[in-house]
Image (cartoon, rainbow, N blue to C red; front, side, top):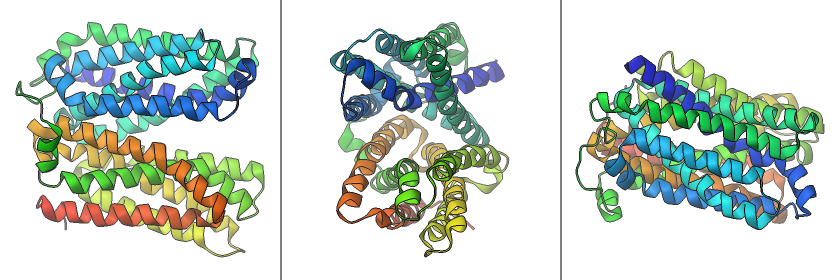
Length: 390
């Protein structure tokens, strides 16, 4: 039964990634049909991000009251409904309305699933599950592309993904007895105590260190991915097609890296993987920052940064119950998720503003600042929680 539940969780992680790249791939067609400015995608994206932050912060209360299984099922149902709402929307205000359950569902399921896996499964599964998230995020643009090129329009792409999410919702509701059979399954492994308040969460030893570390990681990952092509073209003079290809290889590096990390995550330990990942990121940033005449090395540097990013997110999450206690893990993961969404939502646009005024050459320095933030915070966290690393 435990193996069957793990399979369902793997499928849920694929579904978690499915909606994440739909808006970007569909917006060129959506904006034309709705006669909306390109910038409206940013507004919709911000509403979704706001919903994920709110539901992440509320995840401890929700999971203690309803249980990890029911929160996951209800959240996927909300996401499925929101995606269907997108598919029948004819204006930006309607999209903004549906973006609210879209974000709320995504944040709640992300926090609940990550905590459940951190509590009940080995480190290798956390790496592989986040690899499967990358599979979902990679599949949805192909679904959208197929619909756009075969006369089904962007609405059809959203509808297909909403049907997939609805099917998973049914599976999750039928699987609720499996969650309950596992120890702590009713409440995600936290017991039935009262949810922690935010002051209580921030008083937990080490929380104030892990939040900027997680913020820095997600700021680095999303900034690196979003602006890679622009940096390669505008600053390094690399062709548009080549730049686009290597920018996608950055995400491929993350996905493959997480798959490979799963094979030795248990032996290496979370802190070693985090430290190794940051070291690889720093090496990749150095390669990207090399002077003119090293464009090929710069391209490979992006892939290296992707490999370095691979173990950090899963390892930080998986280490949460050990670092802060199983009873506190859902509350801490909730605020970690919110911190991550703040980084991924606000830092890439901030870099865009800085690049407009200073220049695209700021790209490797911007990444370096966040890599150093991660390094300082995670090393300080290791000493604070007294986890010994060779």
